[in-house]
Length: 97
Image (cartoon, rainbow, N blue to C red; front, side, top):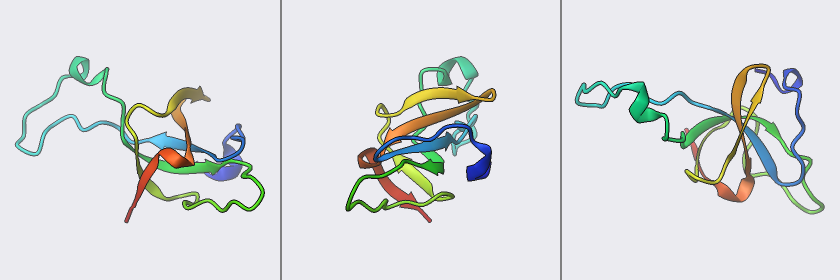
C-alpha cells in the first residue's frame, strides 16, 4: 500500500507498520496450527507511513523498509480491514536488507 493510500497519519516519532504473516511451518517442516499462532505478535513488518516527526529529528527508517521490532511494543489497529501496527521509532531494532 502506497503512502497516499493509507488513511492514518501517525504523530511524532511513530511509524505505521504492515505486519508480515506468521510462518505456518517451521524450518524442519512441522506445521504450526493457527490456534498456536494467535497469541504470537509478529516481529517483522514493512514501514508504510512515517509520523510527523519533531524538531531536529530525522527518522532512521523510510517507507518501504522491512524492519525488526520489539515484540510487545506495537499497538494493533485495523485500517480498511487490514491489520497494521503503530510503533515508536525507538522500538525498531533493525532494518532487514
